[in-house]
Amino acid sequence: MQLKVPEHQVAGHIAKDGKPGPLVDDKGRFFKPLQGDSRGENEVKFYESFSTNTEVPDHIRRFFPVYHGTQAVEGSDGATMIVLENLLADYSKPSVMDVKMGSRTWYPEASEEYVQKCLKKDTGTTTVSAGFRISGFEVYDHKESSFWKPERKLLRGLKVDGARLTLRKFVSSNSLSDMGSKPDSAFVSSVYGGSNGVLTQLLELKTWFENQTLYHFNSCSILMVYENESILKGNDGDARPQVKLVDFAHVMDGNGVIDHNFLGGLCSFINFIRDILQSPDESAES
Ligand SMILES: O=P(O)(O)O[C@@H]1[C@@H](OP(=O)(O)O)[C@H](OP(=O)(O)O)[C@H](O)[C@H](OP(=O)(O)O)[C@H]1OP(=O)(O)O
Ligand SMILES: Nc1ncnc2c1ncn2[C@@H]1O[C@H](COP(=O)(O)OP(=O)(O)O)[C@@H](O)[C@H]1O
Image 1 (tube, rainbow, N blue to C red):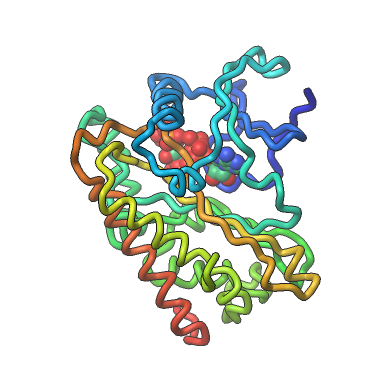
Image 2 (tube, rainbow, N blue to C red; image 1 turned 180 degrees about the vertical axis):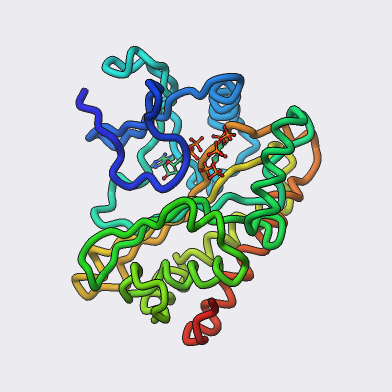
């Protein structure tokens, strides 16, 4: 089995200090190392539960990566990895964004130290003010014919207007390294709009979250992706926008209670996307 480092990972842990990072194979699978303390186990517990839970409607399953169990991976010191569907396997020039949902990323059972660490990040980013934060993104820059990924530090400093501007840039054809340029929102209707677009998918997810009390998706992300190859070939209609959920290391049982934290963040995110769709030509906010 030939494994390699994923080309388009936009957030989360990478191989560092002797610890393995995610890997992908050529058969459409994504290998995520089990994280230390209870996180890895908790994520496995979630996937095992979710993949067999008959209360989850079929049309909702498509928002989650398919789970293929766990596996000890040779070449990574035999590290145990969660084997998932590689969500980017069918994309050749993907633009990808990871949006961490909720107005808090901590949860009641966490240690005081962990809560404080999360609170610091939550108040310093748009998590508290907007109900989500952009954890990472990579866009295919049509002017430069290459991928562009901002530094983490730059994203951590984004305020609400900056997040709005970034969501516009994500669907623009301008050169993105030029921070001063006004995004043209060229792909807004083919990515955010339409019957298969991001907004429609988010609304479908919201309908489920308005009722589901099975799980609380603490610190979970929405991964948005679309294909630029089709746009380069002049077929914007084939951008194949997808909304997926990733990172279930902190998912808890819902115990019959609505996940207000995720739902609130999702409603806010939907409003941002809807505003951009309704006024794609609005002047760039700073
Ligand atoms: O270590 P940090 O400060 O980079 O924080 C990680 C987060 O990075 P961020 O600061 O939000 O860009 C990181 O966020 P992303 O996945 O990058 O959005 C995770 O929240 C990670 O925790 P876990 O894998 O969910 O258990 C976080 O790891 P822990 O701090 O919980 O170990
Ligand atoms: N199933 C997947 N397919 C493709 N890419 C993925 C998948 N899961 C995660 N990723 C990539 O890895 C990043 C980090 O994933 P995540 O589960 O949040 O890891 P961590 O727990 O280290 O934060 C995501 O932002 C995305 O770029």
